[in-house]
Amino acid sequence: MKNKIIFLITIALTICITGCSKGKIEDLAENVKKIQLTGNLVTYQAYYHNVIEYDKNAGSGISHLFEKDRRLFAEYTGTIKLGIDMSKVKIEVKGKEINVFIPTASVIGEPNVDKDDFKTENFIEDDDGFINKNPLTLDDSTAAFEKAQKNIKDDASNNKDLLSIAQKRAKVILEENIRQLSGLYDKEYNINWEYGV
Image (tube, rainbow, N blue to C red; front, side, top):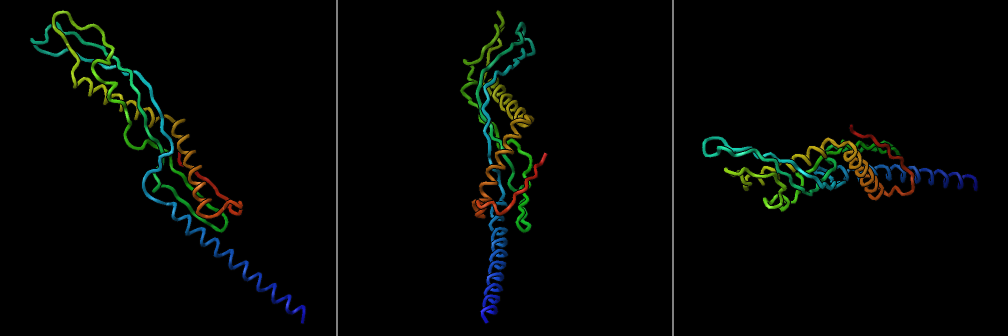
């Protein structure tokens, strides 16, 4: 009789443990789905301090006779954000294995360049013509500013080191979120990472 009671208690505990474990995995899968969102996750902001060269061509026609082409320089600062598109993140739970795909990082939004650096008085310029002047205008400032923004965006978009840092930071943020949402601090589950290239 005593053996029968011990046997029944063992079976009840086994069913309870198995049921709890299955429920825990289902809860994990539900919680992990909360991370798969849309939008962008900014993980890194790069700082730039550059000098831009801008050519101001002489005008054409009689009124611009003797005008000369001019070369101008502007020192400027700016920042740009990098991160990942969350809609491309894939998270899959298979038992105690969590497989996560992180897409390649990219530039998010437009660069933030300080417009004050492009005031005409801040340009370093070569000499103007003696007879006919070719002065700086607001259009020149705007064109130089737009060129600086494009330079920063192009550089960040093609800088593999910056993009790699942004992608690795995304991994840290996602891992922390998965562990918080799922209560995985006990190391019971294994997270496998795959990276877009």
